[in-house]
Image 1 (cartoon, rainbow, N blue to C red):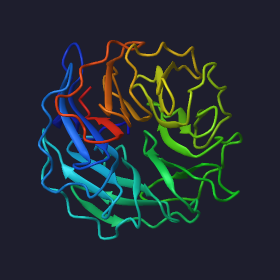
Image 2 (tube, one colour):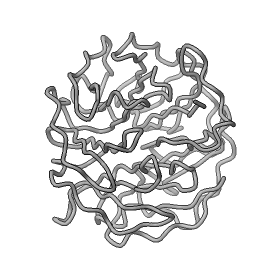
Image 3 (cartoon, rainbow, N blue to C red):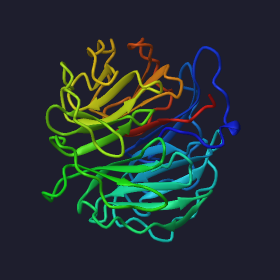
Length: 346
């Protein structure tokens, strides 16, 4: 999620704010909508010639911005496209498809691997990536055994973390593995596990903290990370009001955002090895359950994908919410499930 590769090929950020592209994965065809962004939504890009085959559950750009990947509900369950201010021809499917619906997708920080998690006992498929799918890596020897909903690599690429159901007392809604072109055995569980299904996972930009958005109060759990879980940080004094669905750190690591069920649907806190006092809610709230959240690469914009029209809400961000940007002229066609900004050069 963080990290970069080949950034000399990516447009630099302008003085005064982010410009690039913003992608929203959603229910209802075409399942993915992408817009230019420059202090607001531009005209929606044309749909890809080969659409994702079902509900877009998650979306991400490769670290260099050259590819756009969608995890979706219908076979082949993931679709990846070259990206250059528009969709190129969809890459060929991997030789070994995921067996069921994919719920999350992530590139490794160096762009050499791509991971998806899904609704089956193996939970995760990871492939080598180089402008197309390479071979699938062997499954981990101790996969959790049921639906996984979230996946991310650590910023240094040395670890991979899954958020999932808990069908086995040996697992605690999160599984973390060392990663080096393949899985090692699962790391130790956190001593204070999340209280429910983990739907979102994110590392801080420096890799020192790991956040989980999950079902059941407190709905967000954050741990120090150093080749394993440290002691869970204290809960925020004002909790998210519903099940946590997505989580993201700001690029400078100074803030943490949680998309959640139940109004106000988005909660953001200052972060400095612990939660600060929750920022005031935006004056115009997202209109329904927050499913995904993302900061722009320069930290000046915060986007929330949600399940009621207009399905995407975007705000200026500067240690608090600014006035919501106008909706795109062509809205996503269904419930927003995931959101991502294209990367920019530092």
